[in-house]
Image (cartoon, rainbow, N blue to C red; front, top):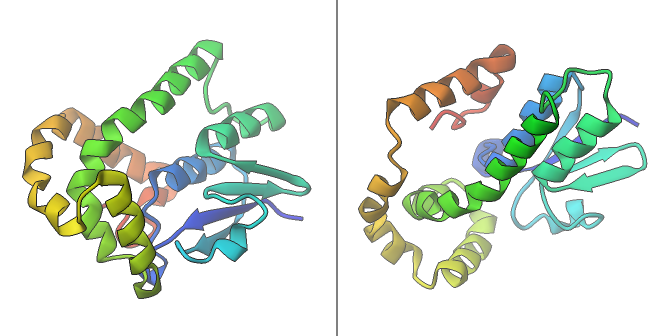
Length: 182
């Protein structure tokens, strides 16, 4: 059985989950080919064996969560290029993995309405109710405050330049799907 990666998608199979992109980039870095299986918010039957995306299935092995997948790829395929470089690199990556959620709330608040407009119409009810419950406001209320969070996430040209370099890696993998550079 080939390696399969189940990824969250929006309309037009647009891949927008940073966690799925982390996994896709780790697979590319390791040189591991995979079948990519799109999963929308309401297609939970496709991932019933794990309950979440991203999820990697490699033969009988099922690994969920982008961090767990990266560690599993590193440990399972030691003959391939290393994702972390060293134990120190792995520790730094783990710090980044654990730190990102603290930054994601302000980022999400600036993007929720944009994402809502790009998820499949069948997924909009689920997306709206789950995000409004998480943030305690309607999507429209959150959208009205998006400017309040821009200063918290504006890290200047250095981060933008880094993101552009990441998008261009592995034959511009990060630009492969419409919307990936948005």
